[in-house]
Image 1 (tube, rainbow, N blue to C red):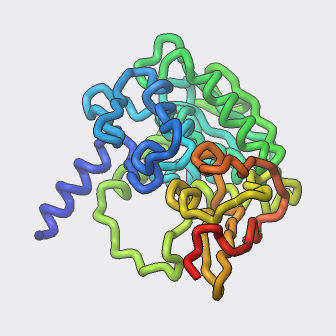
Image 2: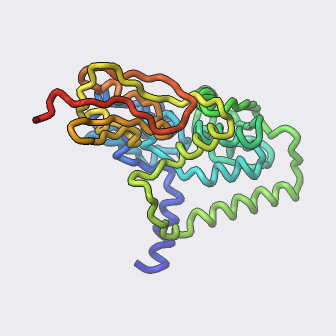
Image 3: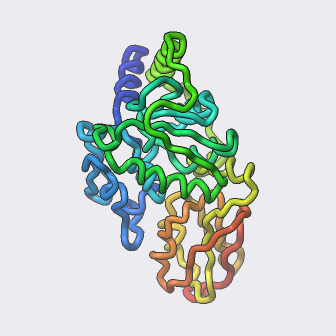
Amino acid sequence: MGLLDNLLNAFLKATDPRPRFVAERCLLHKNSVGGCDRCEQACPKRAVRLENWSVEIDEVDCTGCGVCVGVCPGLALEYPLGGVQEALIRGKGQVRCSKAEGTGEEVLCLGRLTPGLLAEAGSRFGKLTLARGECETCRIGGAGIPAHLERMVEEARRYFPVEVEVVQGALPGERVDRRELFRALWGSARRTAAEIVPELPVPLEDEEKPLPAELRLRQAAARRGGHARWPRVEVDQGCTLCPVCTNVCPTGAIRRVREGEEYLLYLEVGRCTGCGACVESCPPQVMRLAETSEVAEVLLYRGQPPWYDL
């Protein structure tokens, strides 16, 4: 494949409004008990369909608002977060949606702001100021965006006590003149150009399952805050050490290791999203969700399973 084909494919990818679907992180795909339909229920444009134990997003109906990404408990839907994080950093914690008045750093829709992005930016700049347009008439996200944003902020506060102010219209204190307008247009053009250039090969990571970008942002914020309420799993007596919880975990947070005649069940707290798939799917129902401020690997349970063949 030549450079022209690479550029064309990259351009089509950059202009595709749909988030990327990672099947191995989808609770529906992993056959979690109860499944999951949050993305389908949350989509304001009814662009999401659940078919054949997978998620299908219509390219025409999808507007790229990002709401489905924010509600996905397993992080199976994702947009590249670098561009939005750059906007938050360049704006020093102030960004506006593409329909808000004025200038300043821009994101397509405030629905694109995930808990990790909000928590990490809050740990850098303290108070965040987000400007929105008329959501009620917006064709991108719609009237539900303010309520969705509130839920994302509440989740972000698990990792850092971020303060967020949402205003309608222009960002407070911004100057709307030709220089500022040119600067905003130039910055937008540079980001667009960067998005359509083919990605360079990425070196392989040491991790068997690389940590999703959203979880890396949450960890960074938690380290700076020091008082995180990270979700974690606890296991009571009666665990049979079967592999169900490890099979349904969307981010590989739970792993099972054999040592001699015993099995050990570990949880990597920094990978846990609190989705509850392991709790719902546990055959003896001995798992429950709790919270912790320590981002580390913990031993959940150890013992010899009753089904172990001597």
